Image 1 (cartoon, helix red, strand yellow):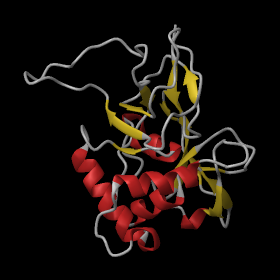
Image 2: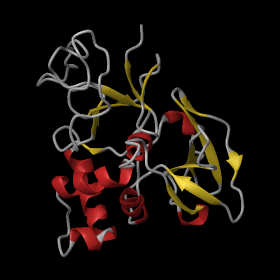
Image 3: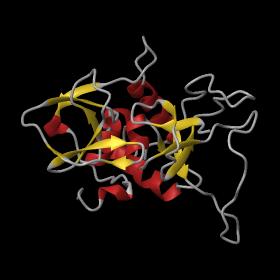
Image 4: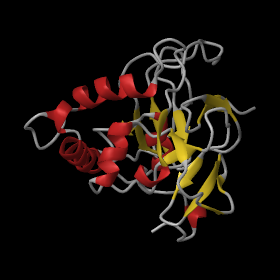
Length: 221
């Protein structure tokens, strides 16, 4: 039976067989029966490599969702994890976090100040405000023109939609747990509701390029 630990661009935890290409966590979210009891346990939402390796280069294997340990979460790709409000891990993805933190600081000077690389603590605090609606404790949507959304971000075409789309330069691609579907044309002069938090979209505009699932097949530049 699939565990409820697959993450969609809304940041929701869903039970589905599709695992994706990345792992991550938000602290311990499950009980001894491996039931999810809360959506997050801390502000540090990270994504990591799918398999950590030992000194011999072999994948480290251990049981998933052990009692009292962090809840292993799984993502289709970096674009999905970022849309949900996660950032790169500072341990297993240090080069990605370093690049992300520099682009984040460059594009968010009002939060980062004079530093050239934002701290993880600062980014976590800002992202926590950007990804959660304080009243409903659900995903916060950010209304903006589609033309202002950088490629490799995710949007909804209507706030009540349940279908996320990955934005590419000349098209939109429907997101699914198994990968991306057939592309559709971009609507012209369209307002959308961004799932990817504003500060992360800023980092993408500044040059951070989220990695994408192989189902893209070269469609996205």
